[in-house]
Length: 545
Image (cartoon, helix red, strand yellow):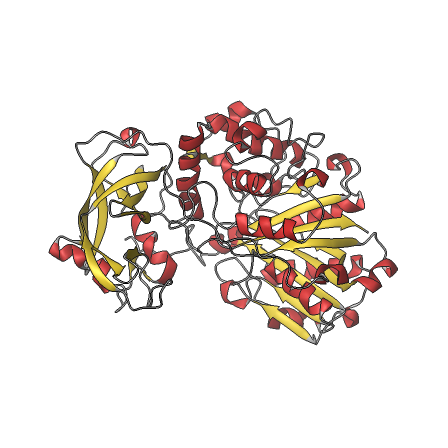
C-alpha cells in the first residue's frame, strides 16, 4: 500500500476536506494570500492563518510519467503532476493526473480536483477539464532573496586547506559492513596528509548516525571515533547543512576559529548492500507507512524518489526553453567518457547518445542513464590549518570561497520551476566571496544525482545563461576534458557512483594535484565543486597551493 499522511491538528483540514468535496488551503486575510504547506504562522506578517476553500481548478505546470514500480498498488505508468491553483499560481500541489492518457498530458493543461479516499485520508487528485491547454510557455516565479555581501572583510576560507584525501573500495553490493569502508577511507586520508591519528583533533560528517540502516551512514561520529581510537576536541554530525558537504564547511569553520588543527571529514554510503540485506526498500519508505513533514506532500502520490521531484522541473525546463532529451543526454555520455579513465568508476564501458536514448525510461524526461548509480563506498578528507599545509607530503589545496546561502524557499514544489531548487543561493554566494569569475575555472565538478542537476548548476554558476544549458552541453565538446569547461572528468555520480557529493571533493584534490592520469585536465589550477541541490546545496571554489 502507498504511504499516507499522518493526520495532525495542523494538516487535518487539508487531508479530510475531500469528505465534503472541497479543496482547502490556509489563508492569511491580513496579507491576502494562500499558504502551502500549512504552517503555524504567516511568514510575512506573523499572524495566525485561517482556512479557506478554493475552486479546485488548477493548471498543470509540471509533470512526469513515472515508469518505475515503486509501490505494488500503483500500476505504472502513472502521471505525477505539479499543478498551480487558479486562485494563486504560486501555490502548487504535487499530485496525480488521473483519467488522462499519459501521452496527452501537457504543461498548460486545465485540470479540476477529484478525491480518492484511503482510510481516513482524502487525497486530492486532478483530472483534465474539457478546456484546451493554454499554450502558455512562461509561468510566475517567486523572487529569490538577494545575495548577502560578506559580513566581514577577512575570509575564513583563507585560514584552511585540504591536506589529505582517502577513498575506500567502491562498488555495487560489496557485502561489506559500512564501518569497514569508513575505516579504509579515514585511515587513507590521514596517511595521505602525512599525519597520525594522534594529530586528528576534529571529526565531521553528514548525515550523522541516524541514517545507517537506510544505507546512508556508517553509524556517525561516536562509533567512528571509537573505531579510530581518537578523542576529538570538536565534532559534528548533522543533516541540516548547505549540501552534504556542509560537514566540510563546518570543519573549515572549526579550524579557522582555532578549535582544531586537523579535522577528518568522512561520508559513507552502502545503499546497494543495505537493500540486499533487507534493511530497506528501493524507495527507502515502507509501503503502508504514515508519513509526516515534507514527505507527506509527495509520497502519497507515488512520487517516491528525488528523480520524480526533479523530473517535474526538468520537464518544465524542456517545455519553456524548447530543449530536448537528446541535448540533456550529452551530460551522461560525456561523464562516461571520463569514467573510462577512472579505475574506481562503477561503469567504464563506452556510452553513446543512441545508447542513452534507447535505455528504459525511469520517470520522464529521465531515462536510466540520467540517474546516478547507487553504490557502496566511503570518502574522507582532512581539513587543516593553512599554516601546516606546506609541511604535508602533497601540494595543498586552498579554499578560495564557499557558497552556502539559502535564497529560495526550502521546497521541492513551491519554489522555482526553472531549475533544480537550491542552486542559485550557493552559486551567487560563492562568487560574492571571491574576485575570480566563471571564466577563471578550469574544472567543474557539479553534483549530478540526475543529469538535470548538473545542467542547473552550470547555469546557476554562470557558465551559460538561464535556459542556455541544454544547447551549451549539446554535442559534449564544451564539457569534454579538453573543452571550454571540463565537467566531471572522473565520471560524476552518473558513472563513477553515488558517493553523495564527496566524490566531487575528492576529485577536486586529485585534479589540483595533477594526479588524474588519463582524465587529468591540463593546467588545472581553479576547480569549482558543488554538492546537493534540491534541498540543500553547497559550493566550493578550490585553488592549487
